[in-house]
Amino acid sequence: MDRVIAEVRYFVAGSGIFYLHVNGKVHAVLCEAGDLLSVPKNTTHWFDMGTRPDFTAIRFFHDDDGWIGDFTGDPIAERIPDFDTITSTRAASTAGA
Image 1: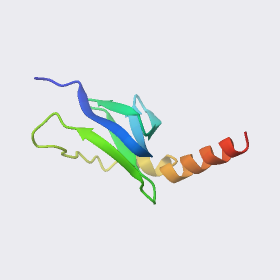
Image 2: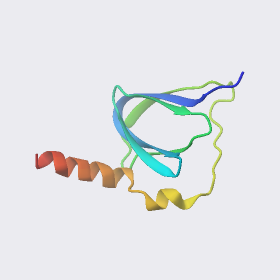
Image 3: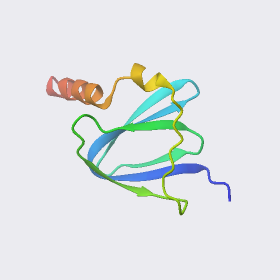
Image 4: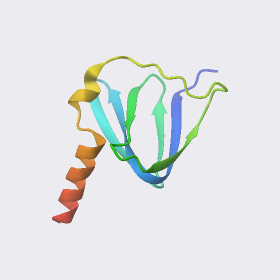
């Protein structure tokens, strides 16, 4: 059976950022408690939980083998703002609002 979803996660507590690399663009998706994220099959993606990880997520597996990473070696993540940068900018903008 061909699956169209690569992975599904439900965030129970805390937060993290999923980065989806689609059609030459990187989309940073901040996931927080109550969020459900499904990543389409064959979508390059990565997850950043910051330098002080504090989250709980439930991952739903489609295969009996569980998670098997396919690391690309692409340095693109080094050019994208990380979790700590994005969340500190977000905190600063909401504090000033």
